[in-house]
Length: 236
Image (cartoon, rainbow, N blue to C red; front, side, top):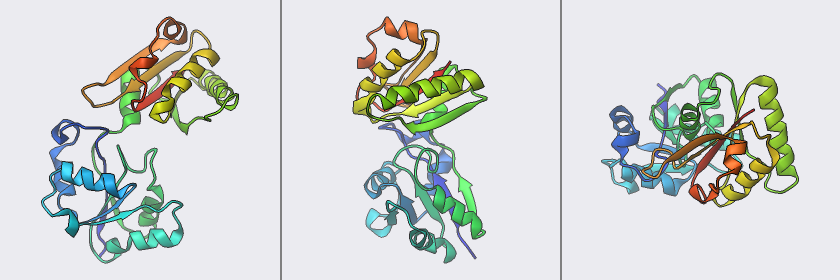
């Protein structure tokens, strides 16, 4: 009989687990002995954070290879086919959502293996909830181009798509490049476009603000989220 693939959310930062995870999610995580993780080091830290009752040296943690090949998927899912339950963990937030791991989940479905998503933090969902922007129609685009003029062209494309479809556009950036992306947004977007900046979600330093571009231009706000994990949301 196959085991169950549990999709285990992890913290977005340094918060006590009771503030960000239901007790039921932790209970299941602490029963598991096999894990596949985006990053094995952060997975070990997460299990220690959860106070997993089994010593870490006795827990099997496999890191997702990059690139992930079909043979890797079969190997990583082997414990499930042998009857053991398996936890899939991202580096932060929900696995398979703006994170690797979807290929394992898709293959598990193909093998008839039960897939169980567990409740926990998702930076994208939390940012969308708190933004006040359209939560009926939205799209996540990952990272925008790092260089100009490609980045500004992409911003203009997303603003046009948002305006045509009444659709919120979500994207992220490596924290040390937040300031450059923010400046590009202020330069490229129309004054009446809405921009939400959501930083350090679930942490004590959390900061979320939604303003029109014209209002953002009047504020020297980049220092508020410089080098902090941030989700950007745009609605034209």
